[in-house]
Length: 217
Image (cartoon, rainbow, N blue to C red; front, side, top):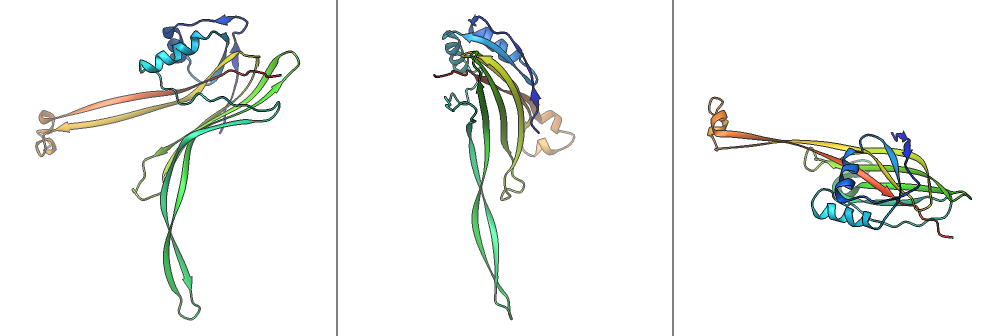
């Protein structure tokens, strides 16, 4: 279910941030909501690229969308997986017989952003923004259709022309246990603690979206 959010407006100035400041801003932005960053300088984009080169963040997409006033613009980026579905066809009335055939079905897991802007006469832009993220889960059994996890949020915000908005709210925690040891010895209950080890890791990923509306007259 989409979650409607609100934010704090910090507009009115040209914002200059270093790479470390941008990283702290993204890392410290927790929970659902949005922040108006005002008009950022060109150095802001260079710092974002520098963070990606250092491995601090990963840029999923840098699209440029165009739409008319009051009409929605949609961005969808993701992957497609396929699974085989068996179909049984019956024929014959007195002695029914069957034949099996197979078809391939596709399932998408996307990051989808929908934006509907309304431009007012005072150079203000109201944006209805909906973000949906879906990811595949492991197949059980292996030939089963792929499962998916869906997360979404919705925001209604108002900014001035060419102001940058930071949106967040979609987080994911991934835990994994990797056991290593000497074959056979690691399976013996009394010896496995001496001849095996377990590495536990937990990874937190956060989806952050920057939106900068520009009115073209």
